[in-house]
Every structure is written in C-alpha cells, then in structure tokens.
Image (cartoon, rainbow, N blue to C red):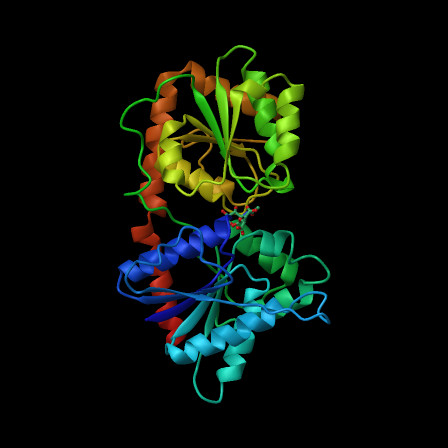
Length: 366
Ligand code: GMT
C-alpha cells in the first residue's frame, strides 16, 4: 500500500509511534510518505520506501496565527495525488484529523482518500476537551474512515467524553524487541534510576527528584533525566533544594533510548496521566523495571507486582518504597525484569501489532 503518515515530528510518544510504525511498514514492503512540518526525529529518510514531504507554512502580516491546518491539508491532497496514496493515517487528532478530512473532501471528485485517526492521549484528555477544540475534535473523529486508540482506557474515555458512537479500535503501542534489548552485562557505578519524558507538568518530573532524595537517605543511587521541556528548570532547582543535585544528571533530548535504557536499573514514570506510557514499555523490553503511577492506560501495560509497580499519583513514600524494594532484593529485580521483557515480547512486540494496522488499512481501503 501507499500510506501517508502525519504526526508531530518532535520528541513525544505519538510522533515516535507514528515514525516507528512508518518505518516498520516500509520494511514490510509498503511505501510510506511522511507529511509533516519537519523530518520526524527518529526517521531514517535513507530507508527504502520511506519519503518525507515537508509542510511549509508561509506567514503574512495579517495572520496572527499562520494557518498550519490549511497548509497541511493542501500538502496532503497534493502528495496523495502525486504519489497515488491509498490512505492517510494521522496521529494525534488535533489538527491532523481536520486537515485529513479536508484533503479527502478536496479530492473527492477525482479519487477516494480515506483517513485513519489514531488517538494518543492528550489530544483527548487535555487538548481535545478544551472548549476551543472540543467540537472539531468530536466531528473529525466521527468523520474518520477508521479510528484507533492506543489503549482501552483512552477508548473508554473518548466514548464517554465525546459521546462517540462509531467504532474505536484499540491497537496498543508496540516496541521493536530486536532493538530494545536487556543489557548483556551489569553497568558500572551506582544503581541508576531513569526518567524519560518531554518534561511537561503532566509528567510530574519533580516527583522523580523527590523519590531520589527519599531513597538516597539509605541507598547510594543516582538519577538520569532524559528529555527536556518546561518543567526542567523546576526539577533542577528542586534537586538543589533537596541537596541531591550532584546525583542527578540531565541528559537532554536523546535519540537512542534503546542505548540508554540498558544502562539503567529502574524507570520512574510518576505521571498524573498517561494514556499508554510508551517509555514504560520500552523499559520493560530492556528488562528495566518501571515504577509508575496507576493512571490511564498504564495498568494495561505494566502488571503491578509482576512486570513493574504502580502506585498512587504523588505518593512519594509508596513509589520510593518500591524503588527500595527492588534495590534491596536483586532476585526480585531480576525476576521482575525477566517478566517485564517477556510481557513486552509476548503482547507488544511490533511483529504482533503492525499486522493489526495492516488489517485495518485493508478494511478501510476496501
Ligand atoms: O506524553 C506526552 O506528553 C506526549 C504524548 C504525545 O502525544 O506525544 O504522549 C501520548 O502518546 C503516547 C504515545 O501513544 C503515550 O505513550 C502517552 O502515554 C501519551 N501521553 C499522555 O497520555 C500524557
């Protein structure tokens, strides 16, 4: 098939899932056209059957906000015609679904161009429910030729909040189990906690620092923080305030999480909301045990007490307690690490999930 993919090309789970999906589809023989405002971060454009088409948004003094949605719709329609696309697959509803709907309409007289919308989380739970975007999000979801959600929890929430009557198919996120592998050797130095995110408020990055400070009372551990975003300086200040700054390393944005994860022991994901928690899955594939919060879709990914631990949001005592438990009991940690890897492989391996998207495309294209 010839598939057009649109996503946010920056750091963030939805863009990563879209990019890795495109890359896996190309490896399976499909032709994949990324239509985005810049080259997706994890995309290798040299890969066979992968193409990148930039969306340029020109400005004009009259525009207070350049109309990206329109530029994207025009580009989608143009690329669909030039490359004879079978369908568009948009990741993150806002504004990609609206652009795809418009592109479909623009070409309707000449060709069919169905579009699939994949809901990732904040497009529903935070941005989509904003009054400014609610009606258009609801409408473009209803209008999609197919809609998928990355967890059952997000599906339920979308149906409840937006009163969606059409089918929303759950296709969970996936991980390439040949790329994300456990470490062959234990790493040197102190036990290491890792956090990876875009450092937005929803991630509660300060909690990672608080957990470190708590655990350091009786364990010599360190914390690596990968990514960046608006909450980074707050986390840095907090580390100074709590006197643990020399044990926290801010790594900035990382392109190769699969290289970073095996150098760490425990993943911290103390988010207030997480519709899936892709990094928890990536950690599990690398045999790094997640200590996360019991929110959103995380219980669908991490089985509490088996492949990781889930505790209440903001419950530093409970989350630190789980970290201590894992540090104090190497047998427990290695058994949970093995179960985490097994679960990632058995349920979320890309070889199992990508065919579900292919099946959906076949149904949509007809
Ligand atoms: O977590 C973020 O803020 C980024 C966001 C995104 O859209 O890039 O992540 C969402 O999509 C990811 C991929 O499907 C999920 O793993 C994340 O759980 C989800 N984030 C939230 O629900 C907060």
